Image (cartoon, rainbow, N blue to C red; front, side, top):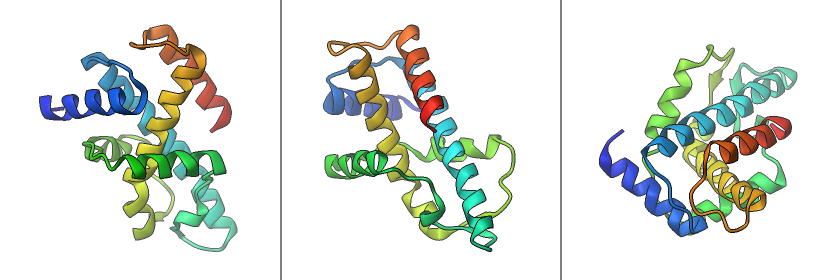
Length: 149
């Protein structure tokens, strides 16, 4: 990841959650977001199959009302993040059964942004005055997301 990408994530976390992150956090952000998106895609594949399709549509994704609100909040921030690396890293996971539809591909950056907003809010729920997440905060946030996704 480039320094420009790191600085954009740092600025985003300051703007969205008054939090400071460092280089090691950016790697965690990528891993965390990749895993969450992959989980959504896997469930979406099951939904596409149940609907008799071999292409994953956005409506197949298990986007909850809460995540939809976080996605909208990300859109409202009008931030551009280097999410290409996040989305490319999904190819490191086991192959998905079906093709991803164009509507899903177009929305993946917003979904990733919504997951980041949800992550920031999770950190703030765990510790309201948190400024710089530590390993224990990441572990708790991951456990919460694994329970919900």
